[in-house]
Length: 212
Image (cartoon, rainbow, N blue to C red; front, side, top):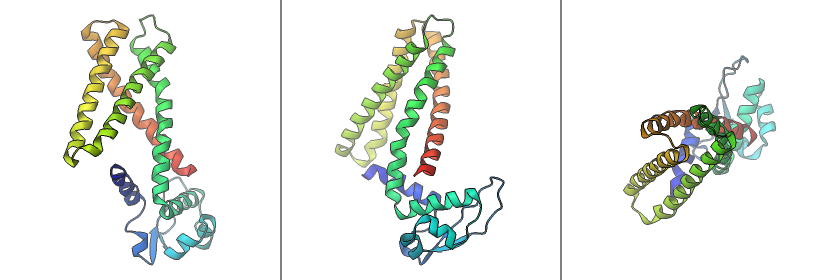
């Protein structure tokens, strides 16, 4: 519970300014540049926000434009039930990992294009290393309540270090190349991984927000 509070706070500050229960009205600006006509900011009554359905709300306040109406509708849902949206989006991140696996396997296929490995073998390697990473993360989550507040970052950093070393050793043993090539390809793979993970997470969160 303690670890999820920063996530909820960040999501709240991203969409709104201030807190709904401390105001009579709240500013909801759905303006985005999708080639639609820009609409002035409007203040929505807190009573209307909590008592009206999102569709009725956007009709009452005369919000026009396809994207403006959709984003305002999703914002209204979020403001009424912020915790559920955060939990919903975090749950959808698991789909990002499933999407990431074949993409990572494709990167391995390109890195080891001269090696006699099938795509499925690269996929199994990617799943195997991620299984260890997830198990390590679960262990850290179980141990965190037993540690002090200042030890959380150190524990997570130590976990990432161990997982990184394990992946490097696994890559060396599985693909059986010299250490120089293995380390070079390991570094290149990390850049690919960070890029693909960022893209898949952003796409998953964006889709999750619009489907909430």
